[in-house]
Image (cartoon, rainbow, N blue to C red; front, side, top):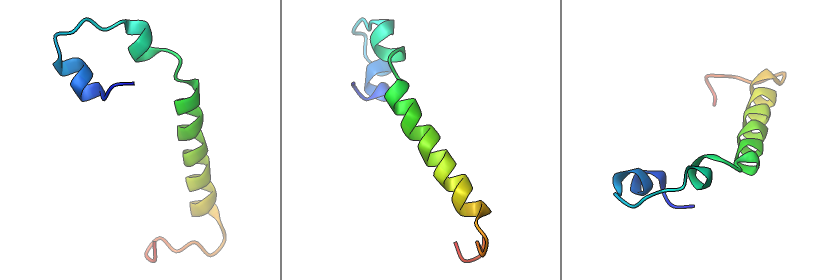
Amino acid sequence: MADLRALFSSNDPVDSAEAFTNREHQWSLVAAAVEEHLRTVAAPGFDVEAA
């Protein structure tokens, strides 16, 4: 997938299905990262000032 900045600064026609669909894999990566972050900050002994 092309860089979105380049994609939207171009005058080339873009298929919306290509730009905005089939993002399940990307969403699962984001969700996993958020879940890991929440586990980390909720862990006993987590010190926000040491992070």
